Amino acid sequence: MTMNRSEWLERYFEKVAQSSEEGAAAVRFVRANRIRVGMKRARKSVGAFWTLGRNFYLNSRHYTMESTLENPRAWTLFVHEVRHLEQGILTAMSVYGELDAWQYEFRLYKKMIGRNLKPELEELLSLPLNHDRANLRRAQKLMNKFAGPWYLAWLLPLYPIHKEIWFWVTRKQN
Image 1: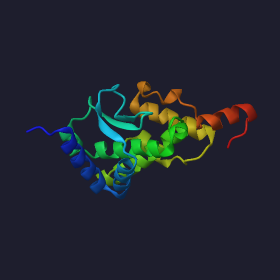
Image 2 (image 1 turned 180 degrees about the vertical axis):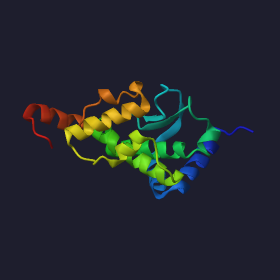
Image 3 (image 1 turned 45 degrees about the vertical axis):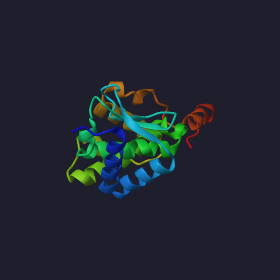
Image 4 (image 1 turned 30 degrees about the vertical axis):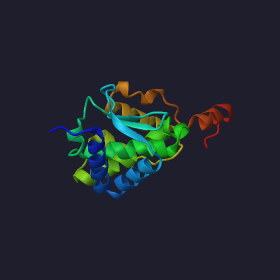
């Protein structure tokens, strides 16, 4: 028996919300802000993504409706992408915003599975969330090492773009 979209969505929200307080908060945010959630095909290096139209999609290359209900990665990806929607576009489209979302996601994932992650993720979790440019460059390298060059983190400014421009004009870190 196959599920229809609305049945799947309610069951997925329930799984994410029951997985953790972070998951429950993400589901509340999505419901309160009427964010559309679905599945779409994307590049292989992408697990999930958000859009400017405030949509969230799981990559159908990696997930089916059924697998999202049993896979903790599908729940933590939801938390990651909702974190970006909460950050706003300027922060979300920066290495700083990615580091925040990756740490939020993988701390939760590690707690769920109860074991250490790949070395690059463990190192990423150990980085401080700050505006130190060397730290953000290291985070960028670790993200690309884990997700591959098509993840495109190397294209993002280190800071949110307005702060990045300020840095290039003044040469002062925020």
